[in-house]
Image 1 (cartoon, one colour):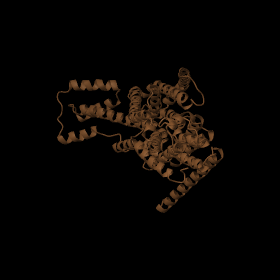
Image 2 (image 1 turned 45 degrees about the vertical axis):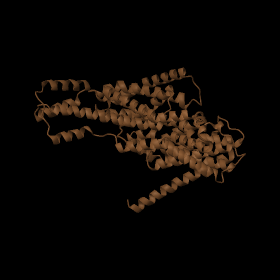
Image 3 (image 1 turned 180 degrees about the vertical axis):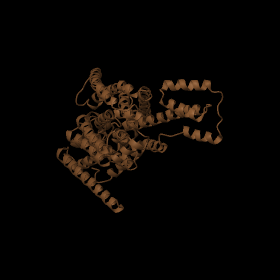
Image 4 (image 1 turned 180 degrees about the horizontal axis):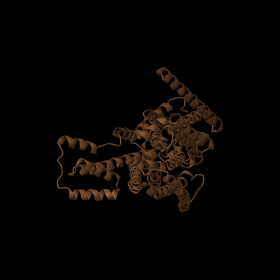
Length: 518
């Protein structure tokens, strides 16, 4: 294909994307003008709706990659399939169950009652939307997966301080958010690594991997269904139906048990048709991984839609009554619709860039590793919620991917050490080759016995030349996690809140001096 033809196709795609965005913005403006509180300053509300829609699209383009990236990177699902499933689940989660978390965005970071002038508070919310959306847009362009929650937190903080001084900030909440920068990725990484180690120990390190998979995979599906059932009931659907935690635990357990007995014969049948290799057994995790990604997308839509429509809901409510700053925001259905459709549209049009980064550019993911990442995301949120710890879904997912990659590095280095021990033994080339082949096919327990016997029986070690030692040392340091990706992602995490705060303060001062200063 010629370069001119490629450029023409790229231009056509950009025109199509731009057309869809313009149509969506027109629909959003219509919804704001006809259903919003337009008693005071209707054009300001329409402008806020457009910015809120822009923020929602940026959430879809950046944040949703954390849920679908591992599934795409492991080739469990195509990019198109991931976008369709995620768009539907994200929109459904936002529209059906998103209202409950919106008030935290409005009043959890700054104190609305600290503002004597309602107009100033409206400007704060609008500035937060603009700055958060701009920062997310930039992060998506440079392929940096950042936290949308932290983007809007920084925006509200910066504009809030610019409009009301340092006293308006809820510093305790902000300290917790800073703590989540460490808590989220560490918890996510540890849980994902534990899952991967458990699967390796109980399935892929066994001699008969098929028999092991028949026992363990249904059990893992039980844990997955229980975790996601509890996750959806306690977090994603709590605005639709309120169930006590004790009852939620019982319901989740029963549903998981039903899935266990349904999937056990299915897994057994599939395993019988596979070869007794790690690569073949890997295929058993494809469908559970896709289901896990869909569940995560629904829950993500329910929770993170607040980052787009929380400030918009506050603006809409206060424009209806400029004399009242209420700490609770009413969430009209049409605003939920803007958030849900905006996330889905942003994902469809601009999501592939970040999906590739998360799924392919940090470490190599197969279906088993990607499944561990998805499980870690759900369980970490549940554990953190039970402990009252604030966490970021973005940081959890990325931390889980790093955890999986670093565990692989550790196991690879340990295996290299074992091979070195074998190669240092007094054996002929043929004996050495046969021994290494047997060692490679042996179970973990058998490997340990073989190494112990080898150490006891050998008379002396072969001294390696200096050059050989360097080669061996280099092999030990084989990196399965791209270090440049770590630096880039961590740097973007650290600067998200301060950059969005500074940007929001600047936007606030500009808006205050513009035609919108009413």
